[in-house]
Image 1: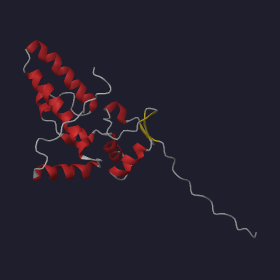
Image 2 (image 1 turned 135 degrees about the vertical axis):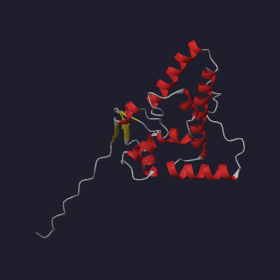
Image 3 (image 1 turned 90 degrees about the vertical axis):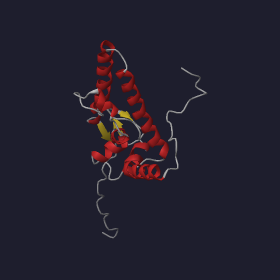
Length: 170
């Protein structure tokens, strides 16, 4: 726990931000997933790095500790929807940023055909029209677990066509 006034950032940017291939990959991911800025992409990349670091640390442990911690990590990632139940630790090391971005609420809305574009999905979330199990979620970057995926609801009522107004003279 640290001082709330001295918060640390939860992401780490690239070491060489001006490489042409890096810029091209980042720009294509921004457009594909409808991200607001590269910071959201770097945040997802930091999540992937942390899971990889946990997996590599588990590989260095003894067999007795390793089996328990490996099972816990894989169970956590399978709940999130990043891996299958029968995955092994090598699959954790093979995670990519795309898999994290696919589990964002913004992308899930697009897959469920609630929104037509990722930008429309973002707007629905930010304006408070999306709820997960009767709880309003206003963060497009919220990572949706497999359990919550079926509980996503849209609070916008479908507009009913108005009846034509009667003529005044009749």
